[in-house]
Length: 207
Image 1 (cartoon, one colour):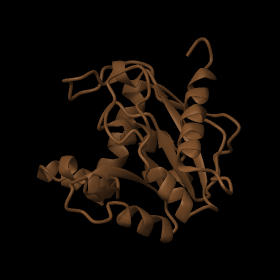
Image 2 (image 1 turned 30 degrees about the horizontal axis):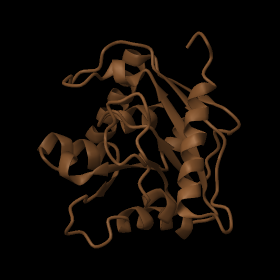
Image 3 (image 1 turned 135 degrees about the horizontal axis):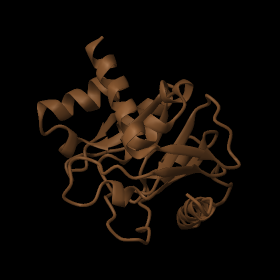
Image 4 (image 1 turned 180 degrees about the vertical axis):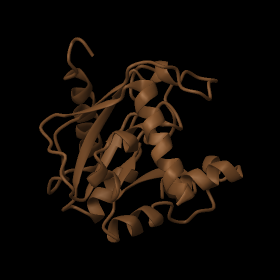
């Protein structure tokens, strides 16, 4: 009960502080299995996306998070396991298959939130996408892959800050993508990247 109370409190705090809203463009907010992918600038990115999802989607969606960061302290461990039920990925070179826990989550029927840049990006231009999302799509060709653009979050959580600043933040969910037959890895990654950028360009002028 305590972990559920903390989760609800954090969701409401994130919404209150950022006024976060999720705009669905060419994509319906339905409870179906999906891979949501987004641009990445902070360890709190997935918290904002997860909080903004409708409850009927959020309950079956797990974020992908770095084990080396979220396993450092007892508070982080509590948050990532008890509050968010996230999937931790070991990014060390010792791991033979870092995608294994993600594939298991997908096999269990969960949707996931993933950041294909692979690391936090402090620039205004997207970093090249890692191949992980291509491998997930190849193993799960029936699952929709939906881009979510995070707008303004770099100003909400600037580098060196641990508490978000009270600024409006908008998310845009673009049209779903699936791996095409015969599509190469690079063609697929380029198409995903273009779809994500296009989602951000569709933001209302007054956002």
